[in-house]
Image (tube, rainbow, N blue to C red; front, top):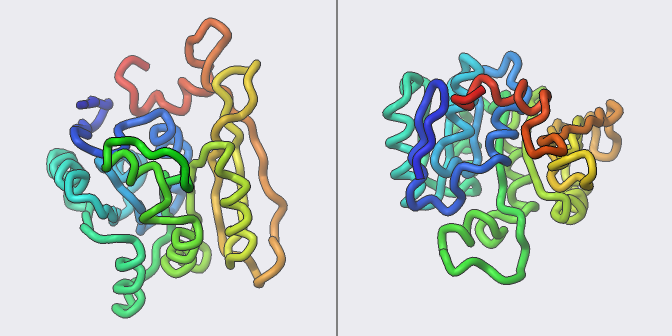
Length: 243
């Protein structure tokens, strides 16, 4: 399916994970202030990279493993006005991390990722969708290890996960050299419990202690009548055509 935003176009035909509200929330919310080098892990059709390109002057590197998604992402990058700042690498994040370390390349100020989150359970009959949603090719341990290796000393990583995935993610996070610095609970309406969480990760000052208190916030997508809240409109107004 094709989506036209205010400053770019996305054709995600054949991609395992099509354009979603989750991705738009993450791409709009991620704190990109002063980032000069941004990494998009699991780029899919390139939506997060293009949103980051619109919001910053950074150079962006997008990693994608799936052949079909790489083709779509390459076309979307080529059609954008930020093509000169966008690089697409067809590989796994594990291989990219290894190659990046051995080349002594500069690390990234910001890493953005809408990661696979299902572990086990029934998978979609669509192989690409199953790969995008399940942790078979990128589990939380491997993701956090890659972020640790690729993130600059004072860098920030931004992610989004469903509520049911936060416990296993936090178990892995507690064993890593990273800590959560900010979390925003997302709910569809005021009457519903949070179903998604936007959050940022930073390096710990040492292996055990979190140096700064966790910043917490709440975010509501819809009013009781189903229309978007003012905070949602403010977040997406630079991207959605009708706002």
